[in-house]
Image (cartoon, rainbow, N blue to C red):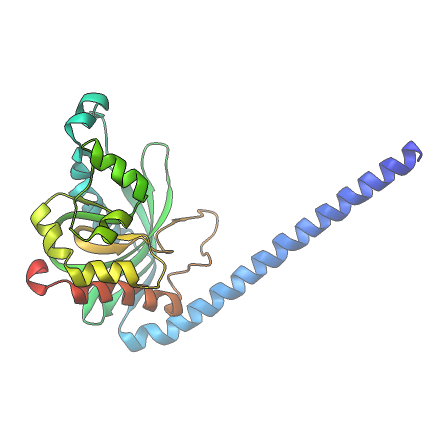
Length: 263
C-alpha cells in the first residue's frame, strides 16, 4: 500500500470520526434543550396547582445552604476517636463550604411539609462548583446525623480497632450502613426498627440520608454536583416527574420517625 493511500485513509477516517463527534454533540445539545423545555412546561403546569414557587435565580436562599452546612460542620470534623486524634491531626484552618449563588429554586409544601430544591454555587478551597440539594424542612434544628451505605468488611475492621460507628443492634442494618451521630440518643430515637427496615428494604435508589440542623436530605441520584456549563442534567429537579418522587422518598422516611423525636 502506498504512502499516499495510507495518508488518505487515515485523514479520511479522522474526518469521518470528527464529523460524527460534532453531530453527536449537536444532537445531544438539542436533545437536552428539548428535555429541559418539557421539564419546565410540566413545572409551569404542576407548580401553581401545588402552590410551589419557582425562581430562576435567588441568591437570598444561599443563607439556607450556609446555615445547614455551618451548623454541623464542626461535628463532622470532630467525629474522631482517640486513634484519629493521635494519627490524623485536625486542620486548624478548615472552613466549611459557602454558597454564593442560588438558581432554579423551587419552594413550597409537599405532604404538609415545607421543602427547598435548588442548585447552589459553593466555594470550598479548590472544590468550587454547582451542587443540587433537595431538602425537606424539619420542625426544629436537630443534632447532625448521617446514615449511609458502607462496606461490610470495612465496618467490621473499624469496629475491631475502635473506630466503629454507632450500632443499632440490627445486625443486617449495622453491616450495611454507617451511622455518624453527634447525639447518640437522638440517633437511636430516629433509627427505630421501622426506619431501619425501610432503609434495608425500600427498592428506590439511595445511599443513605442526612439530617443537617433543620433539614432532611437523601443521598439519592439528585445528590450530585451539577455541571456548571449545563443548566440541566438527566436528574433535573425542575421536572415534577422527578422532584415529586424525590420528595416522597424523604416524606416516607419522616412518616416513620416518631413525631416526638423531631418536635
